[in-house]
Image (cartoon, rainbow, N blue to C red; front, side, top):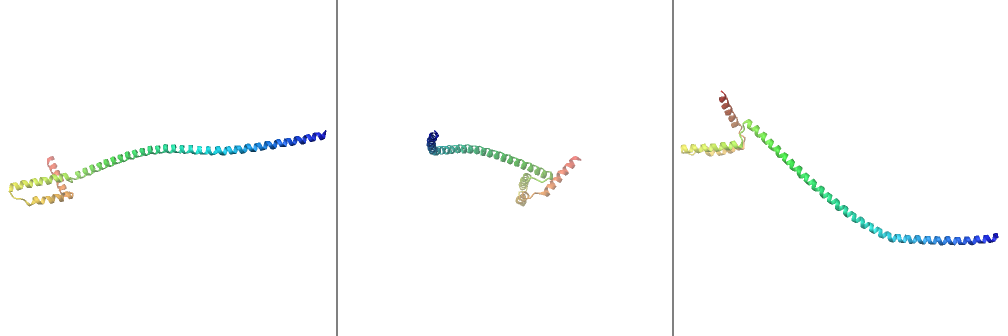
Length: 176
């Protein structure tokens, strides 16, 4: 009986070994099939992912360019505003400076361009009146024009002092 059991065990072992071999071969073939399928599908999936990534990149660049354009427009507007404010400030500063210089020169008695032109016209009118009364042309009329140009070219400090002193004298006399 032991021999029969041993023989049965050997035949069971052979059947078991054959079953394991068959099963292992089927597992191996299933693995190869899965690998082939993954390669086939993997290429398709990879191509699809590349396509989606490209589309996403395009959309992102479009949105980024839009934002850059918006920011650029805002910066340009701000720069224009700042430059206008700066120009306005410089104009105001220049006007204040001119006003102060003008007041200082006036307080010192320095005649303005307008004063010199008025005096030149007055001298010409007086020269015409003298000519009309005497009937002679005076040399001073032709000489007055270069003198007026020289006076306009250089600030007349000495006449300003006389003018101031005449005003001061007139004030003192009026005050007494």
